[in-house]
Image (cartoon, rainbow, N blue to C red; front, top):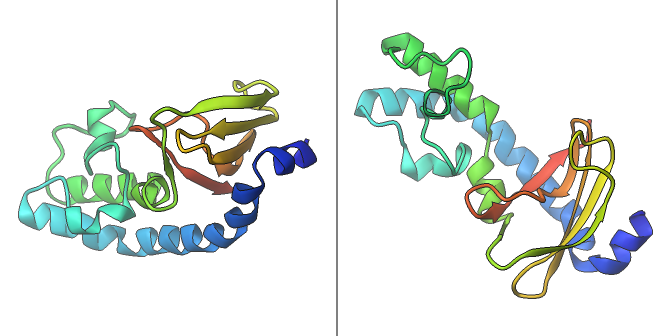
Length: 165
């Protein structure tokens, strides 16, 4: 299957290994900065710290766990508990805005041109997506491992995924 993906999306296969270390560095920076970002949000009374927005998710505020009704996120939390929930949310979605923004692609007008396997449950699922520009990106998911770009867009973006283990 890899050779077919290489033939259908050679440019994205070539550029992907160059982007992965950047994504990993931003992820590590997100973990390190999460207490600071959460602290700034508490100090300013805002659930967004836009100038540090690349370090957390692009499709929800720092209270995304509350907004999405995730287990363990208390809507009545204040003080240290709210700070910890925001730290946890950043660490749950580290650098998502970055991997969806500069390293991702707009999903507007994109179409899947190759699917192989079952998308759910993802035992082994390959995709090639043609973007509106004609550029093609690949994606691979096997259980918890992700490579390439996510085939289902989040907030209108195909985000770079790099979870090899």
